[in-house]
Image (cartoon, rainbow, N blue to C red):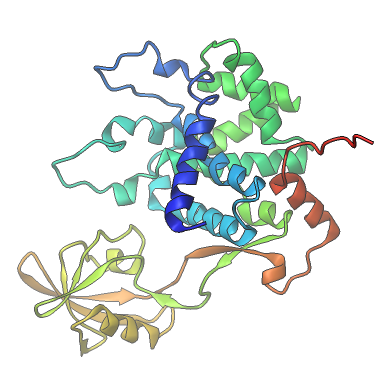
Length: 337
């Protein structure tokens, strides 16, 4: 499938799932419907996020996406959640309530959402993944079954739910209200994330750093400019450049005592060092020439790789777990003989 067709298929998968989730199984905070005012909801992590979780999962289960591509999608999602500074500021519930300001909204003022916001689509999808694998690991149940239970209680009846309704429903579904309360307190109204590394390992998927031991200035866009290299995107909280006081629009003149003219120059200087090394950076900020010390960090980008592609043995249990999760959910037809 080509890239364009894959994007269209993803949109189809997402919007088709909305036929159940949001169209009928919907949050009370979305009602009463008023198309002339913004709808603020605390449950978009579920309505949009869980729908997003089923996007690629459904396509893979249908045999239209291979395992490597699916794993790559998981990696993109987890990078966006695990490595984002936004988690220190808002929970998934609070991110959902920012929809009127970020979902197709246009701001004329500068903002710092790269540091303060994580899409409820993305974070909600990661929560769906974490809950699905947790249910399978701890209770021998699935998110598919939980969604069917919610459909029976709130979707078919068209009784709108609250976030507390979802929490209580998870307790009934697992017969463990303590688990449900803890899960919501930590991962829904709280800002923690589940242990994806161990959960994915149950399915023979390895969550690991892409370039362990590689030095970096942080995830930032650099562009050539007159007199040096300009920082073309906001620097992330906690990254080396941020901690050194640099931000979008600053012009890097030299790094480690060497002048720079292109992003490649910067990358070559960084690559010649190790995480923890400290370099002097000379830059121009708001018309003022400045110097600072920048301490290189380890590249924190993550990837998800099937065990068999990483030289690890895929056990029988892991293979069964993976197949139960990612395999087709369509029952085999009974023989006509």
